[in-house]
Length: 206
Image 1: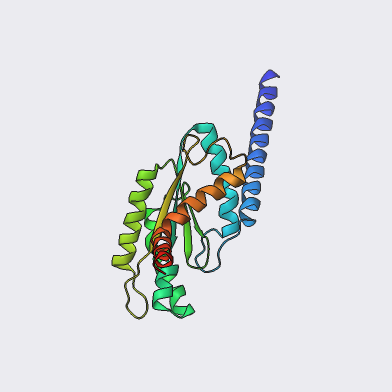
Image 2: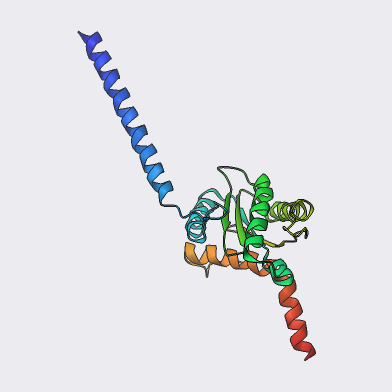
């Protein structure tokens, strides 16, 4: 009698386990369905990456491990070369293909942040390593991506590291939203630093 009770108990436990697994899979599927995706590149949309960065801030606080951002832009390149929209879209897709070679699937996040701008969030990656990856992507894009009219493509890039010990994120920063936004601004300002310096110089020369 005890044997049959044991078998029934085992079957019940297995059934409950299967139900829980199916429930979790359903929840994950529903969550994925609500993630905003950029229609052209199929990367995360800006809205999605912002919410995911909040999670990475929390993870970094718990684990003490840093993560870094790379801000990549073709906006200066487009401004200089005045590409039509359809040619720019083709160029962006080629760039994404090259860029994804340095993204760890299931670990890193990639987003189309603005029209010609991309944001990469690299888990457990220091500022120095992020700089190396950004430089590699910059060189790979220049060497392997050309516009439909055969122009080599040049990216602008900037990097920033989030760490609870990083000096730019002190006690004055109180919320995840402020922290992740500040981190993006650091990477973005580095990306366009050369342009900012040129504009400041022009103003001084006037």
